[in-house]
Image (cartoon, rainbow, N blue to C red; front, side, top):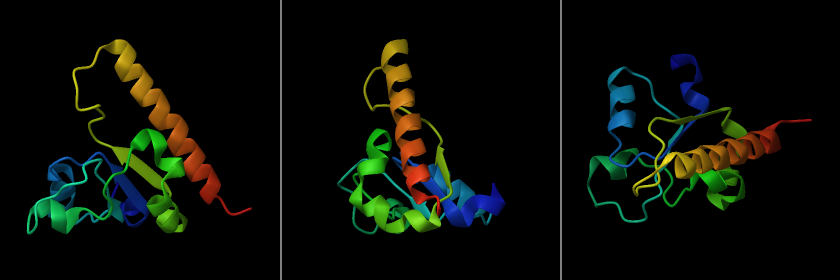
Length: 112
């Protein structure tokens, strides 16, 4: 994990507790994202978040992620969820969409 940190993209950091835990272990991910648009000024989240409004199921189309794509080789999603109540079908759809989008995103970053 430590070896990949400089090229790591974290998805779905709601309160940035996972990012903070990594920082406490001296592991500093390249980018931490959230799908929330409003982050309190002066909060830990504001200090840790590098990109807002990132949907893991649409990361391959996110303009802001494309701007940092040459540095990203690893994507991590600590606790995938939609933010709503989920059943197996919804959760499977969420993960499938995220895997497909991340594969497209990383594939586009491969230098030919």
